[in-house]
Image (cartoon, rainbow, N blue to C red):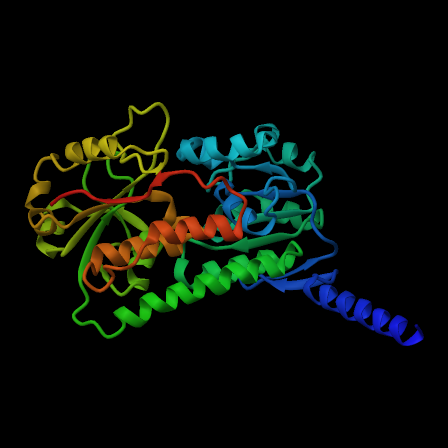
Length: 374
């Protein structure tokens, strides 16, 4: 009996030690994606999201309810991706009651209304740092000893996405959940790079984010966002060599002269359906997508772009450009740019796998990518 008791005690001690090793120990100091050392005194329970799309990161970490820590957020899904917002609020209706602070990249926000919520952590996108500094948000948070942690899925998406999720896992005491996802992410990313690393010359691609948002052509990304994702999968992004900054317009004549092998347009469902933008996302309709695509491909002169002449035109869900699940976006890009090499790749299944194994998001139907011309 005594021997059995000692065995039970040893087992209990081992299990306790094992579980303790997975838990974050507070206070802790982390280095965020901006390279700043941030001290977190205790597990955050009242979180502010400067960019509401980061709720998809919270879904990986706080799997039962990604909203349960939130006291304020910039509800960008409601403004820019209505189908995703409908999905989120259907599963977690309390999300509608969380303060929408309308935080823009320019730093426009009623800071006092946020501080009234007594936050103990703000999570912000690195691209917003200049605006946060200029408008005094960072200095105010520092003065009140409210930690600010920067993550990044846009400036350098392929390099910073997995570290950003790991960082939040540590800060929020969800390291095990974070690691499960980032191991999966890194393996899928490595699988793409192994295939494309030795391919020369690299195919040239022009990508037009949120095509139809203006009547002008052709808006694009440089090394960041979609440009960064294209470069990560081993393609030559035309915008990277032409733009002095993160994004901007390239003349139609210049695009034609660059002779892209592939032309990609991005979009998402917005508002009441009157938008000209490709309505990719949850509950999307193939017929609606092709109807919008037909109009976009009828813009004056665009049919002179070599890729469009050759029928190498694709559409992709826009928000993967700034998204913790951007590995799915990279897989869609890989299939569009390298159709032969990635003929067996199934990005739809990758997304379903992420949702089923790493979140409790509803596993609803979606259309995230389509070939738009034959």
